Image 1 (tube, rainbow, N blue to C red):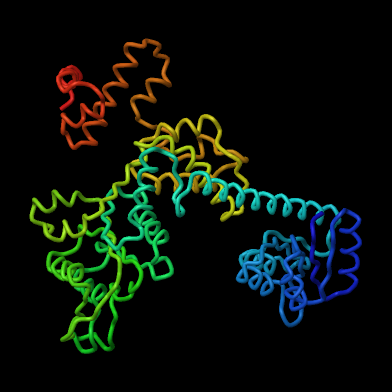
Image 2 (cartoon, rainbow, N blue to C red):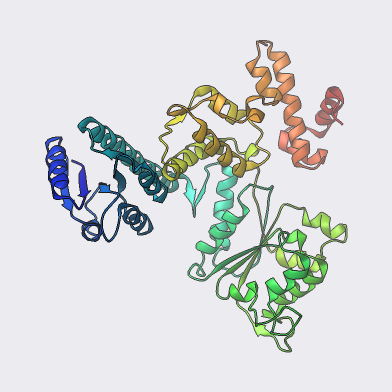
Length: 452
């Protein structure tokens, strides 16, 4: 039995609605004003709030705001007099689910509440599904079940309680910051701060002050002392994202922090002791950057004590379906939508896509499709054009009328060779090991397929 709180300053309306809803099987509580409503809600025994917009002292809009800001788990429906729809819309902007107009019709009230009930049920189901998914396939907020990601999870568990520096590598969108946060949350430093800074997003002229801090008067605009992000991460973790973008001059200063556990602010004459765990992340090949003279070799080895590489999404196809379900549940809860899954054609397109933007691209694609979906399933037409017109040669061949095993096998074999060579940056010996064929056989096939 759903529990409804009717909030209206007019007694006759409270009595009428209470009788109507009780007759329909709801358990009804009534309040004459917003203050009394909040006291009732604090007990946590209400599912839906049906509140008038215009009330003395605190109106329905402000009541809705307070319910939302207090994170009270109820669905709010507001009542607005005919001609005052603007107020109802303002309440919906504040977080109300829907509105009904006065004088109300019985069918309209019941239908609106039925929709609110369905939304509430779906929200709870989404919360349950997300919790179940995290319990079965999650690790500190990261959702995956592929063997390559399970190795990452095990590595995080092993290194979390040591202060050793960690270098996280992987393509953009693979979740490097999520992994850094997982290391922090699984460590004894979890109660300390987690500070993240993108070294490529801050101008070089400001980056030194942001990282290391400064004393008042150190330069023209230094009107007060600044602690610096390294010191702000005291007893916690500092993530230096896009570490490959750090200028050489600051690489020297960072190396000193790692060697001596001290920081010297700009304009200061003495060092400050610091206890922060450093995690670095990058999309770049730092070993190659060292050879090119763009990154200090000594700093690279200081950072690369525990390397964690995140595989791209295209190399862990078994995670795609799991992530689709996770993002649908996540955004149903956030957007208030009621998407129950993917149409078969849409799912095939997503599973065959190459995902150059990795998990971030997948999440954005799912959210966009959910907003555009007409029914309770995501259809192929809800997906972006780049996915609907996927150029994946294997998928195009399988979706065609081609029935020759020989021709289809050639397409698959060529694509696997290209992917292995891309993964190994053209190293044919390593590629042959991934493909589980001899180097001689690989060289023959490269020539046969005309792969450059």
